[in-house]
Image 1 (cartoon, rainbow, N blue to C red):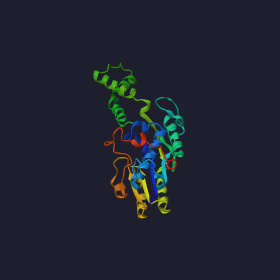
Image 2 (image 1 turned 60 degrees about the horizontal axis):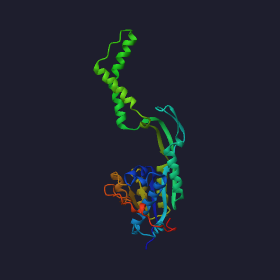
Image 3 (image 1 turned 90 degrees about the horizontal axis):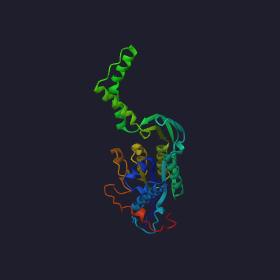
Image 4 (image 1 turned 180 degrees about the vertical axis):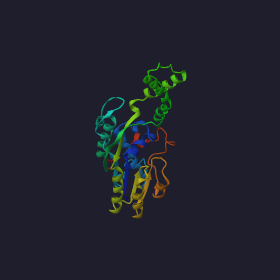
Amino acid sequence: MRVRRIAVLIDGAFFLKRLPKLVPPEQHESAAAVAKSARMLCKRHVQKLTGEPFSSPRSRWLDQVYRLFYYDARPFDEVAHHPILNQQIQFAKTPEALFRDELFRELRRARKFALRLGHVVKEDGWHIKDTQVTKKLLRTKNFMHVFDSAIAQAESGATVQPITKEEAIQLKNIAAAWRGLTPQDVRLGLRQKGVDMRIGLDISTLTLKKQVDTIVLVTGDSDFVPAAKLARREGVEFLLDPMWQSVKDDLHEHVDGIVSGFRSPADAEPDDQDDFANTPPSDPLEE
């Protein structure tokens, strides 16, 4: 049997976003479950490429693997003042940061996994996350003439005239829109740095050093087209797994195929993920 040299590269932020859409809750609700899901995704890709059945009781899939790469950014660990809660938020102690740290520990323990971590920087202040909430708040600008009229009357010393029924409704809409804004509706402007660069560098290094013959990239980002073109020019088979997300035409054009490690969410059934729920006793070498 031909021995392959396969590398699977997982864009971690993309993976975490798409995973809940493709697997049951018990396979993504804990850090250990996410790490196992990442490993199973890699295993399925390798088994597809090598023709080994998914149900093989003593799989040697890792023998075909050069390395499994997981890319993400270290959690933001600074302190910022929340505009709605009116208190300091220690981001290093948030559930999201603790989850990421535990996930990284799990992946470090997994055989042949390599972590590539960038960092997170604060670009600007707080933003409203939901577009619909933003639109709702912006619409209150249309009612500001009611406030302007009341202020003008107060400044002139004139007797304040009673507002009309329509103006009362407008004021209620303004109050309801702003009172409905919750702490969960806002987020701090953060951005990952160095993650895409690490993916591109690893693709180039794996290719030019001839360490692999096949690269599977798990992402939906078209920023990696130049790296994919380099790999293909050097004879490396370059496959893309967008986890059933639609991809741009330039990605289709510059990869050797679109493949899927998980089944389509439209086709999956509750007992479809048998590799997770009923995994047979594993071979120590396979772990």
